[in-house]
Amino acid sequence: MTSAPTLDATTSTAADARKRPPRRRARVQPGLLLGLLFLAVVFAFLYAPLITTALFSFNSSNVQTWPMAGFTGQWYHDLFNDQAMITALFYSLRVAVVAVIVSAVAGLTFALITDRLRFRGKKWLDAVLAIPLVAPGMVLGISLLVVFNLGAISTGFLTIVVGHAAFITPLVMFVLQQRLKTMDPSIEHASMDLGAGRIKTFWHVTLPAVRTSLLAACLLGFVLSMDEIAVSFFLAGTQPTLPVYVWGLLRFGFTPEVNAVFTLIGAFSLLLIGGAVVMLLATARRREKQLVGLGTS
Amino acid sequence: MTTDIATSATATTAPAAPSKTPPKRRGLVAEAKDYLKASPAFVWALALIVLPNVMLFLNSLWKNDFGTVTKSFTLENYGALVESDVYRTLFWRTMVIALSASLIATVIAYIAAVIVVRYFGKLKLVVAILVLVPLLISYLMRIFAWKIILGEHGILVGAFGDAVPKNILYSQYSVILTLTYVAIPYVFLSTFVALERIPPHITEAAGDCGASPWKTFWTVLWPLSRGGAAVGFAIAFVLTFGDYVTPAMVGGLSGTMLGSIVLQQFGIANNWPLGSAIGIVVILSGLLVLAVISLFTHTEARYD
Image (cartoon, rainbow over all chains, first blue to last red; front, side, top):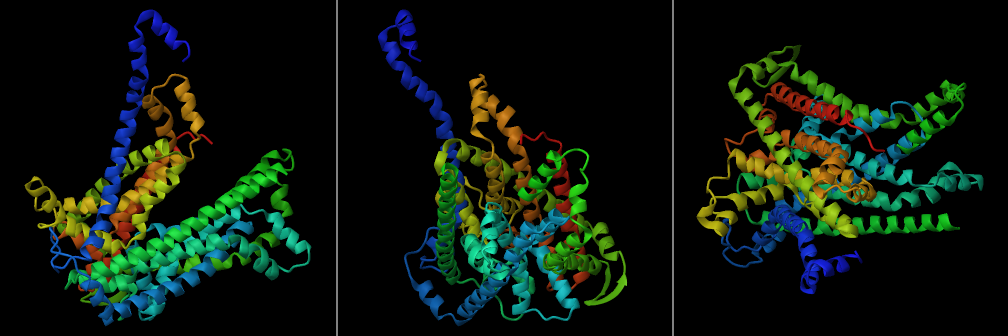
């Protein structure tokens, strides 16, 4: 690079040499610019529906057409007076809480099982447990429905919880497996050497170590459960969860309250997930620092 | 994963002669004990995943007479699927819709992931999370919003006037568009993880050796990340092939997919065996695509 000016000086004027840096910058920029433009379009595409719903929850006409009629908070007001909607919302909350608790216990147990025990077929077990997470919800819904029907179990709270736990558990399990991998087993050994039993060690050492990951996975599971429609549709009995209730509204008799309730739930979900992400990143950074500290000492 | 690597590492570093000692030292009793301790996971897998799918398959073989199911085996549900023009058309339409939506989503998500990994440095994780955020917003709401956007008096027509056709909604195009939208974050996640794992010095080395960015991409980045793209494509396909919410919302009559029929058979039509048979077709189609994809990714050289 340093030799360039002298070369230039022999072949061209100083003015030409001064032009070079801008030209080089101009050669790098189109790629970056095009890339940013592409990303902007992708982001617009991804966020358009979210913005649309939030905007239309304040639209004063109950026909969903553009241009919007005017600003109103009426739909939020109606929402808080809509008993059926509120019942469905609280039902969804109950389903989500119970499903998440079941999944947290099961997911933690399975993560410990696959991390600590040695047996063949572990990969198969992992793959089979993951199926409800990747398969379309419809398949999970109808396959469970068939079993419940044969077992003469009528659909309702219990069946929805089972359906939700089936796909939240592998989620919790995979997040915790990642965490357990990076955990130093000697800490647990030390605890047991110092006389703590298995249960005490689990309570005082293992659980605190995975606490953040567990909480983050549970928040994610909670949000997914609140949104779930594909599975719940088949497994909900007479009392619909919120998405199932809204599904009915969307198809037969739409009210803009739907936009309002989704905007509220969306904002709430974002808060929860934002919290989960911040927690995960913070602990990851702290762990990194600890590891660095271990390396230097 | 790490435990696997650890055990295989000890196995390879051990002297050649006692290569059989590790399994011997862990006697049958210990192995059985571990299986016993692991039994809750196996029971869960059997009860919630294996049993339901087996029952679904059995159900698809049972006979249905106007809503009453008799448990005698018959292939007539599958026969009905194969013979009927309606179901054949629906199958191929679903296939075309799912394949095109997954393909478009893969291309878009892959390019986006390359840009994010290449240009965003430390911020790339934040940008990646921003791409994933829509996944956490109600599925139903995101689909319904497309109805508002694409409708005859929707935002798109309102913003661009006559430049856009007014009959996009309730067609196969609106279904493809919406499913592409649904699939992008999943494919992005898979490709982003694959691209992120490629050590930056590999591409730097290619550049130092005189390869143009284009050449670096095709000879270094793409071979190392197409596995991730393929997995993303497979996930997208499985999810879009079995969807029934999107066709119900934005599909109308001409955008009906297999999922809509399953819903109908388990609901109003009350023909569970036929619905189960279609469900099995959905599962098999997904498995077929997964098998093709894994064949494609297995034949590749690995860099780690």
